[in-house]
Image (cartoon, rainbow, N blue to C red; front, side, top):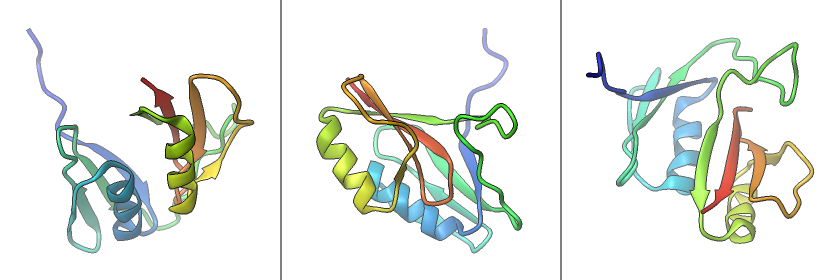
Length: 118
């Protein structure tokens, strides 16, 4: 029996509204919240939250000195189409993108995420 259930995944960032807007465009949903904390209830999925973190320093990927600590795997049907979309929204590639079943990016606040072919 589980002792708890996952409530929300929270990403620290300098601008919660901007980062929530990025993920709303990628995953759907509408950002809601105050200046310091914004929730994004993703249709049919796990909620994300974004918390203002003054002095936020994005993780470096890959790096043993400044580990990523976590990343999001986002499942997509068409890697090429999804890549065009996230790049247009401000994501940056973090690795040489090739024929693998996944591609690695940083969101506008520097958090790593992967687009994964289903």
